[in-house]
Length: 587
Image (tube, rainbow, N blue to C red; front, side, top):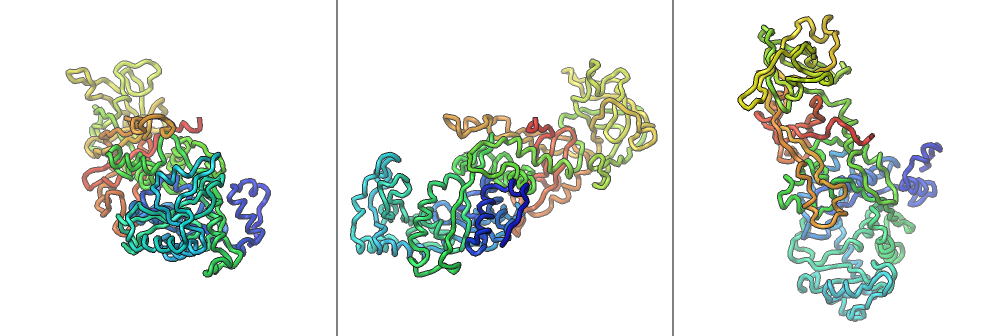
């Protein structure tokens, strides 16, 4: 395959794409491109995984290759089919398609046979030391390790013990199989790494009780790549120090050294390449810490809109396109860094501002009575997005009694306050009439309960008399037709930029104001959301056929961008704030 690029296009390539194009130009692996996304099914995908997904699937898409989905299911104690299903669903929601689905467990027999071969060649041995003893004997980067007392045990004995481990005759934790490499190697991963451990306490989600020994990541991963024909094994930077071991294991059985020659030719071999991980301010990317938050009830679940999980972002109102655009903006390098969460918010704001219909919602309502309005009410036609007639219109009910924001009225105001205040100042009600405040009514505590005003019947927007300008326009919702909505105002989960770098308990750094709930008055055009809420979905917004249900986005005028939450029922509307209108990132 010949790839031609202009000079400007060449400069825009990230370093992984440059590697791929160089391989294609040189005919490496006969010009074939195959990647894989290999998640462990022990939790929910988060936005850090999405960066890898966009790389793995994006490379395959760009260079007419294939990306397979492979579940790294080598630890039955932590894995479950629930996670398999959610991972598949999240990838589909992001808009990617895999070639085939594989599991590391597909290769358990081949990997076991390889381990037997290693033992027979004197390259592996069974160690009976504890995990703590093995760790102590590893040494340091500047000091060599100490050989295990079992390192030179006879091949026949190693075979017998390893087979006994697999038959379930050895207690979990009592023995491991280690590769016999070099206890003095400056790369600590070469100091007789563990290849297999015993797990008998949990059945495997696919193979049940068939296996009692399970391969470690470093032994299983590269071989799985080799079996599948992966050409570019792309992963994050923490695996860079594992790459020599990745190559070492493949060297031991690839080509003429292994009876099962690769169907991709004797010169075929996968190559591992690494890019920087994604770290975002005001959140954590650790599965362990996320699990603590969920189990301790500090968030409402894996799909809590404050969580950086894919299902959490989806419930927050992020779109696949915005997330993929975000990944394009941050790029791929070999340098670790921290990305401002403001950039992520900026991308969804840019995505929604041209597509989300505008709706009036009053968060802190006070009643407005138009004393000279004598009609029974009327329908106001408003554009869904101002200036975009092609995006349609909506109907707003108008009448004598309206809800307005309490902050849009002051009984006594100076010249810098342009909204409602007695004294002859004109203010336009959004998409309708010009009014003037005449007074107000208060309760016993002095709190304003009702504002009174008059309107100009000849000032309706869209009419000849409606062109008169005012210095302020305020939002409103007609009282009789208004809907009560539960509005969840989500903010950043943590109060500090980098909670992982702070000392002490990370849970003490949670933002106490990350969720506020208000009851808002919203216009009647959202009644359609109550009708559509009868569709059958689960708590996470999933349909019965394992596909993601889409929920509508809105810009609540002067409030922010919101999405309908799956908690919505036929008589209860719930809206989640995706992001505010204000964009601080560009500043």
